[in-house]
Each structure stands twice: as C-alpha cells, then as structure tokens.
Length: 248
Image (cartoon, rainbow, N blue to C red; front, side):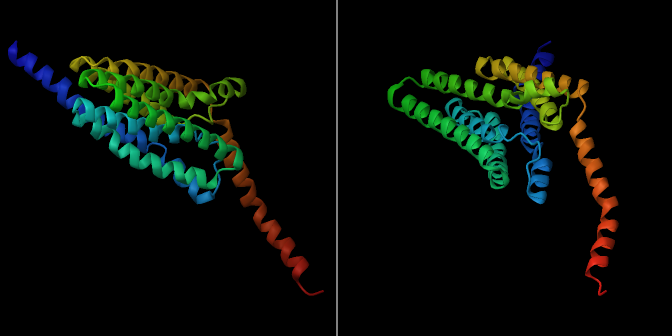
C-alpha cells in the first residue's frame, strides 16, 4: 500500500507536471503553423490575434507566481510560451490592419499595466510571503481565465455563421489537454490557484472542440476553391497578356 501511494504521489507531483511542461509548450506552439502562413502570405485571413498578447501576459504572471511558490514545473511550463508568444505577437502585428493593431495594442497596454501595478503593489505593501503568493495567485488566475477564454471571443460569430474558421483546432485541443493535466497536479499539491483556473480552461477547450466538431471550416474550403480557380485562370490570363503585348 505504501509503495502504491508513493508511486501515486510521484506520478501526480512529478510525472504529471513534467508531462504538463511538454503539453504546455505544445499548446503555445500550436498556432505556429498558422503564424508561418501569416508571415508567408503577409495576411492574417481569419486568424484570431487576441490569444497572442494573452499568451505573453499569461506566461509572465505565471513565471512570477512560480518564483513565489518556488515551483520549477510551473516555471518550466511557461518560459517557452513567453518566447513563442512574443515572437507570434510581433509577426501578427506586423501584417495586421490598423483596426486589428489597435485592438492588439489595447490588450497589451491594459494587461501589462495590470501586471506591473499588481506586482509592484504586492512587493511594496504585502509583507507576508504566503499572502504575497496568494495575491499573485489571484492575479494569475484572472489573466489565465482571460487567456483561455480569448479564442471564445469569436463564439458569437461561429454560432451565427455556423463556421468554425475563426477557431484554431490544435490550440483548442492543447488547451483542453493541458488544462486537464494541471488540474491533476494542482489537486495533488493542494493549490487551488493551479487546479481552479485550469479546470475552467479545460472546459473552455472542450467547448471549442465541440464547436469545431459541429461547425465545419467552410471558409477554408472556399479559400482552396478560390486558389484552384486562380490556378485554372492563370493560363487564360497569360494568353490574354501575350495577345495584347504581341506586335500587330
């Protein structure tokens, strides 16, 4: 019985968060293919940029929380995300139109202001280490919930248009899996700041997966059809150009 309990504790407190680091990194990497397409074609298309600055804010606050609770697992799960989030945010901002840029800037300004003011307030006015960790934990929970709900900003459009083109399937799946793993770890170490918001995140991921299952990505099909039409029209356009450019 003792050996079984030791193995269970080892699995929940060490193996599960180690796997959580891998899945967390994969979650942050999941938009990379779409970002490469954005950079290649110099257009956002229907890519939802809101989660990108939220990735940056979310990873920063959880790195701060990890330093308060001395958790290498929480830190390891968020450090790669910070680097990837900064890269993807700048790429998307570089090709976005002015309206999208303004939206991204508003999110960045608000979130960084909240992070800075909240961290400074805790450092200056909260002397007890446990209370400081709790205060940062509440801040981290709020931002994590914003991050998990960011893809749901397109929910109304998804339901109204009955197309899931604005939802990113890999990100939704990884949010679900990552949230479920950190729920297990949070329960094992008795940290409600970890299992609580990640439980909500797993639920948000499940909702997105449900929408992806019932609503097709019809816009992607239309893009492929448009691309195919352009390929088919190319020879005709070349013939027209050669006819008008040839000497009479």
